[in-house]
Length: 348
Ligand SMILES: Nc1nc2c(ncn2[C@@H]2O[C@H](COP(=O)(O)OP(=O)(O)OP(=O)(O)O)[C@@H](O)[C@H]2O)c(=O)[nH]1
Image (cartoon, rainbow, N blue to C red; front, side, top):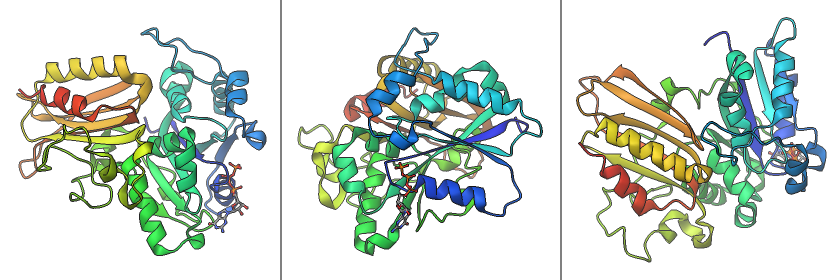
């Protein structure tokens, strides 16, 4: 595990500050050797359809799904890099022009050669504090980039005031309840917040899950069974999800947090999750969770990228630890009520 080269995928809408960040990483005196892979179409990364169509190889997964495409050119570049003498301390992939960082992330799980030599560390998304509202309003790509990320860098903080920053943060939270948000100017962020994040590391998934939901009505609150009101009323949900600006029409990508204080039936949960990912994998950008399985001393930790699922029983629950099940799903068109019902039906 440790001899695998960590890979950070850098995403973010046009002009968010990715190049600024890359230049910073490459020019800083850190004594490390980083390889940077820039999408060769980055300079003309405006017409996503054209680029993806021209450049993407369709990869058929075991389960026959062709929605999960893996970039063959990326595999070739990474494989080539790994053959270089001396190696690299880390690889950074900039995904300009890609609609969804999902296919790039999947490359690191699916290709055997790449998987053997590298491990996906995290997906970091840069956010332009000044323009993000408009980008989120207009662009599904922008929403997906935010939703997919393990960490969000809220850049260009010099261009807006504190109230606007707080508003942006609330909106980012609604799209992605998991990713910590770091504010930055000129993409100035400590490197350890970008490299070595461990967003895909099962051992660290648990510590990255929000310990608790912010209170009802607070920014970033995601409804769960602890909210004392009816989740099934038809007009419920929109305003709450989108903070003060009330972006109710942007509901296609969102995060849904589920939790249960009772243990789950391990088999029932696995069956439910497998089926969910098989049926809705294309729409599920990310999922992570820690599950309390009945009759099992250890915590079940899982994470998923579309339909690629990894899970394992890791350390035992500690006696002083709150023993409960938590899962977060981030994706498009998620039916919150159905997810909750399915999850709760797994109770042992
Ligand atoms: N005011 C301000 N400008 C910034 C900041 N960060 C970057 N910029 C500027 O924003 C512009 C875009 O930054 P880039 O780093 O090129 O953004 P990018 O994400 O690589 O852009 P694309 O490659 O087009 O997707 C440049 O002119 C930067 O100098 C910031 O924190 N504040």
